[in-house]
Image (cartoon, rainbow, N blue to C red; front, side, top):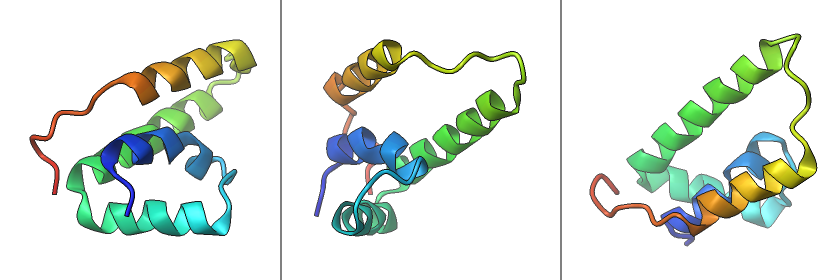
Length: 83
């Protein structure tokens, strides 16, 4: 099973349906046992919807997206609240 850090790394790719079958299954298995990551996923879904609904929002440049994903991947999630 994957840990929270790996789940966070996969979250945006999951939302954009860019993961293969095995990574999706691992991600979803993690969500079944982790309340914190479920909350993170729900927040990310809402954020994605907000950005998608804004007609004036330019697409996120690949370089910026990569930097944000790297920052998220490097961030350590506290163990408090993990299921």
